[in-house]
Length: 101
Image (cartoon, rainbow, N blue to C red):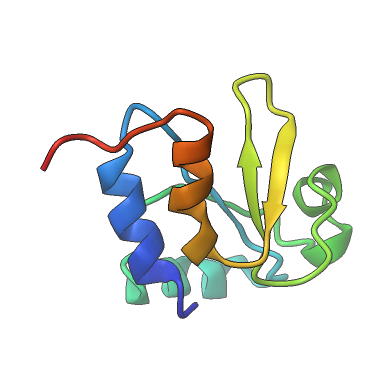
């Protein structure tokens, strides 16, 4: 949850160039909704309420939280990152530049 403010900034900075999507592994969807509101998450969050055994977590091989992936336009995982702090450098390496301030 510590990286939510950074993800919100990056979501705004790269709108239309990169998509930021969260995956909730919580089994309580009401708690997921509360967390999204309390943390003011501006990017979409995928949740099925089935934890690590759910289709969403299984499809992306989620092992723990937080996990950060860069996914290409075909939906393939390009790279797994240890932290959201690495996202911007990775996007620039892939040739994506943020919007001008």
